[in-house]
Length: 329
Image (cartoon, rainbow, N blue to C red; front, side, top):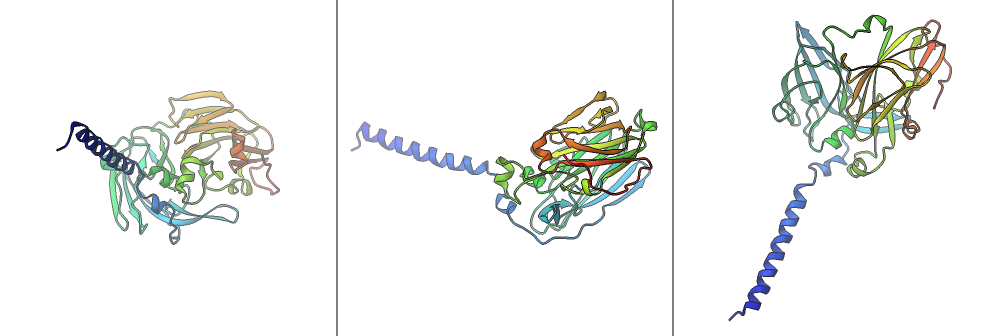
């Protein structure tokens, strides 16, 4: 016959056993899915152009999700998850008030992917859903807010999909334009982002980036500078894709005459030296170049410049590149 003490002992053992099982189950549920697949490499697929057509105020865009090898630094190849085989993905442009009909074809044979447009109002549970390998999905959105926006894969774990290369810029042009349109002589697009140890989810979570880059690599915009001529007003659509770091966007040797935060014409600032862009933040910046020479474009967090976040705007009398090594920071 059990005593009260024995009953208490067995009750305590059962409670501890139950708590242990509960702890194991709750720990399992918070692990990001696909972590085992994050570290795998896949065969590289060649880049393809997006298919874009306009019918009145309806814009049809067809893109791919695919794995493509990307040179992120000279001689350094990353087996990237991409949109259309480039990192960043293609720059997309629509006009405020357009209807966007978007199709994503998933050419990745092993993982689902999706599209999260920061430029639209939509229910993520129905409009940003996963497209399975070998399948396609079509989604319709209004584009009612002008600006410079990020797009990215929104499939869990989102960190892995962005860190592996699935992001880009979409510009929603203001219906009435920007008030400074008539002043602008040249315009460029620039996306800042980070590369970590390849397919290493632990590195994405807890380590510093190995490369911080503009437009996907650390050399393209210094070997092949952006161009302007003396007296030009230059506009740059800039986005910080992250996924983890902020950008302190700065053009050496000039002051930004105007900055439209997030690219919205109502969010205008004047005389800005440096614009802070959080991960996923964007802006339209405009400045005038008054003398010949090389103007470095950087994030003013110089540990990131040392890892590759630099571009060069080369200013000449005629706006042409006459060669020579670009100034570096």
